[in-house]
Amino acid sequence: MITCCHCQKSFQPDCRQKDKQRYCSKKACQQARKNKSERNRLQNDPAYKEKRCQQKKEWYKKAPGDRYQAHYRSTHPEYCATNREQQRERNRKHRSAKIVKTDAIGEKSDSGHSLRLIFPTDQQHWPKIVKTDALIVRIMAPDGIAEGVFIQDSS
Image (cartoon, rainbow, N blue to C red; front, side, top):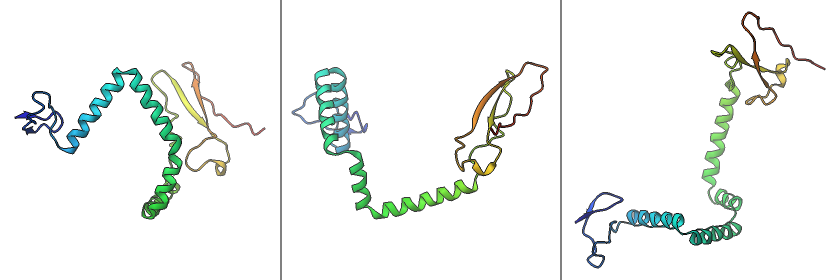
């Protein structure tokens, strides 16, 4: 009896393999053995690695990912319905929650420097989830100088 290298269970090896067998005959263990062998060969045999890369490129040309996704969605309407409902729920949460805490960025660090976000003064033009038009500025004030108020130039 020997112990399988994958599932760690004892098994009786095939008598024809003598001392070579390290994995039991379970499907998962045999797949683990094949995967390990493939990884080792890819690391140690450059010609084999090149051949496999070429085979993958050819396969991807025949089966691009966008067609796979479209086919999956067309054949799994229950997945599409569930995903659509989950996205609606995420959108509802985003509308009601403030995603970016603008006042958290203004805290001073130990070095006396601070980061500030500068936004347009008109709040209706702020993006809902990600404030892409914000400008992050590092203010480095020497000791003894008070911080000023920054006003957006409307010109």
